[in-house]
Picture 1 (cartoon, one colour):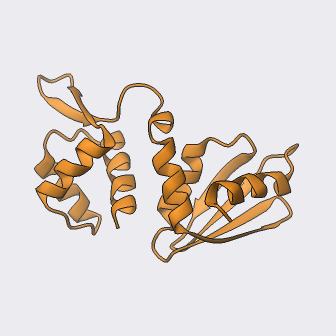
Picture 2 (cartoon, helix red, strand yellow):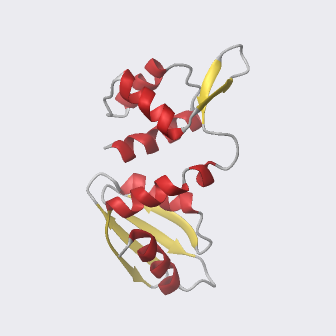
Length: 151
């Protein structure tokens, strides 16, 4: 799935010095995501990744400078909308059910939204558990998430 692959690319380029598309392909394969170099090339263009000096004379792939959550806000919202199945709350916990295999990507999308009322998230294969901060109404946070998801 494209959204899951691109979320993994964000994670990989944020946490590793990746100097070539082939290296990115290998790292994705190590994560169980098999792709061609042509697909990676399209992802890099679509995601607006840039090459920056790595400090040792080479260049590495990187997210655009600045707050990447702003750059990818539309993508996070689309991923969230496409993958969410249902949501419910219990106390200050919100459970978001997603399509099987998309829990981590949905969790990353939620984290990328930087919603003030969410203290943190824990993602599984097909669900995400969100903890709502004290002083915030879980019903309001749930309503915001449902509006983003179009539910």
